[in-house]
Length: 296
Length: 272
Image (cartoon, rainbow over all chains, first blue to last red; front, side):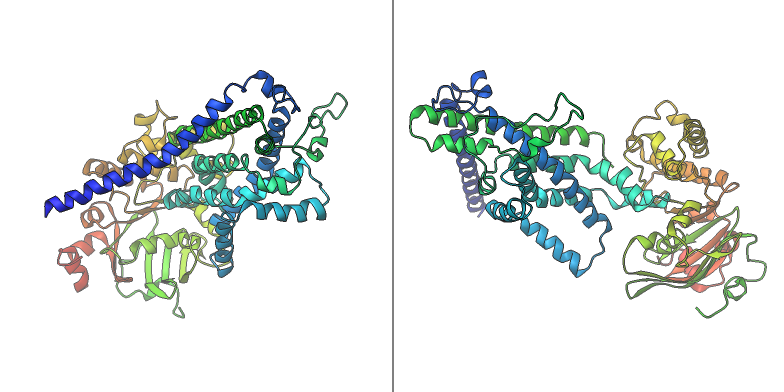
């Protein structure tokens, strides 16, 4: 009797371990292949050069700059809106069928294929609002894409603040906004920030919606600089500039024949994975640091 | 609800057993969670400068009753008050829809069952009520914080670590911190919801002693499930059962010669 139960136990151990090995092994293999192929090309020249017909002279500079600027727009547009919506839904909205409906919709939006967001953006930003295939369009598109994720993680982080902390603030005469701004937000900042970073790290690898809104695949220039020599010294022309991003650049290289371009693609992939892992690492660090000061 | 709201109607309080002057008074207070009636026409006077204790078995509605005083139930949907809580000297009904709950909470302070300091510094915990009221002057804050911590008998223990997290103190210290936080804004009435139920006997003793000192300055209404505690510290006691007020009277009298059979059974430990 005991023997049979132990047998089941051992069976599960083996099963679980092999599943884990399969998952981690595949990932390691992929990453290993990227490293082997790409590490040789990942040098200063590669990072600071424009794309070229000659694989050995080609670089990823416009794609890195493009990705960075698109992320900047995404963050500026997506984070405030997402966090505010999350706060509203969790702290202010009354529980009615309508808010329930909104909640379900938001959760489902997180699962909509990203190319659908691309189509929406093509119609809305590119044609209706006439923003063109610009950094602004791409940034706003990705902002839409991460919005549901930001809203959901914000709500979860806020919900983790115990009721008795809110009651303590209210009992002292705080308004709802004072309670949110002085307590709920600071105490849930770690969770919210983690959600934001993870959402951005997802957005940086997105390709489909960016292709849909019309990003270029061969960009031999940089967007206009945001700081100029003449007053008012700030320029937002770059928002309207054509652009490319790293996954698209990578795809462009992959689709070209020849070993050397494949190496470029691997190097770009390595850089992209590196950036994503760095952001995830940052998320873990932020969570760890801030959790240390918040407990109840 | 149509009955008169003056104090003459309460049957269980005999002549000469009605406190004076009053700080507040619950008049025929009923309370609903959704359609469930949890307080049934409860009338209790709160004597100024005294400690009034609410006792009764778990689920009798004493905490619900206490939370009516600072309109805590307003935070949750589906709750409804009937009747009145008059706050003296002006005698206004603080449950009136016209009265902003924040205005009420500015005058009444509350200490909860579980110590709930904010995960901020000791200083910021005590100062928060003042900050909410717009106090920015550092000197005023410093002075008020020290005063409140002294009143809560915590100053000597924390004066060297005002910047430590409030949540890092011991349980008893945390609860005294919450009392200091409540006192910092000079409330007229201090509401305590089983403040010692999560504490050990020594910490409990400290807080009981503290309340005796405090009642000279602030009227206290305390919920407790501990009858000995009510007998030790309070001047007046209200015994509640199943959402109703069974008996109200001076603590000494109520614990020695209860007029109601249920009260007697409860205080002699026959149920509850």
